Length: 258
Image (tube, rainbow, N blue to C red; front, side, top):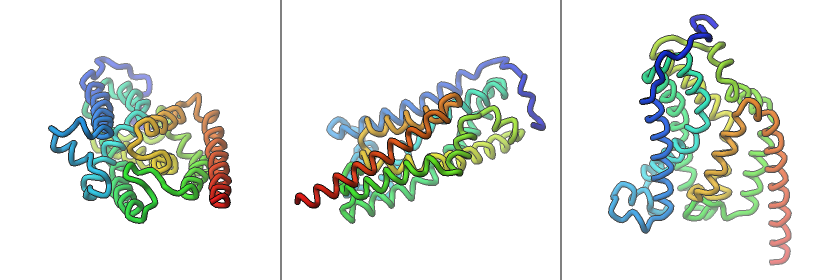
């Protein structure tokens, strides 16, 4: 708790930070929605390149898509931390922007793995051009992994941090610009550890299925609300495990009938 007076009040809200924050989320989703309708982007070279199917795309283009996806999905779940940090920092744009930078940088470090993974899965025929699994067994495995992870100690420990911004800042506060970045990096690592299994479900419904990805984003945002995290996390796990079992049984019967 050293160095932090939690009772300090905002003297001037940083409207510029919220324009930056919401603008980043909105623009990321906007480009992703445009990418899902490739016929509408023929006049925009950069977006057109990103809209190439995975089989036509380079790793850098897939990385661009995943980078946008990370921004669109993971910034909303960081909202509570930015609100509390803005309160503590009296509306400082720079400090909260650096906190967000540290956080999103950790998530962006996952992009190469996701990009190479999607490219490899496509080449092996495990996913289609939209990043959707073509194997019911793989779907079952991913669903079970995400569901079972909900009940692990590391998930619960990380979720307790992700759902308690003030407690985190009281316990891990660091002063200065570098301190803001370090706290963001810390939170990014915790968030990746918390949400990696849910992110794998992108390959169940399709990484370019916007409705599916919005649904996953909503789950991660709701799960990180302090008053909902403990009530919501368990049912999510049970639902995912149930879906995994149903998918596996269906896969077995379809194979028998075939």
